[in-house]
Length: 112
Image (cartoon, rainbow, N blue to C red):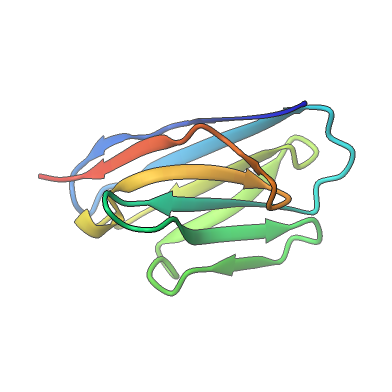
């Protein structure tokens, strides 16, 4: 069984920064891609950023230049560095592995 545990969410003022972390554990045979998705209240879940095993990354247009995805610890840990946060970044952020495994989510609220 695979488990993904996110941390690092919270309340931050506009223009501030947060770093989300996600640790994958359990019966992991191969990590092809890890990523972050978010779901705002009343909206569908959307892609934020992904990183493949070869290090290639993909970002939603809305976060390009502000967010950075990276991995560590033999790539079973993924981070999302979020800078210049905006109120519209407010959402529950979910970690994903290989498109099939999800974490429980961590709330990010950007408000003054």
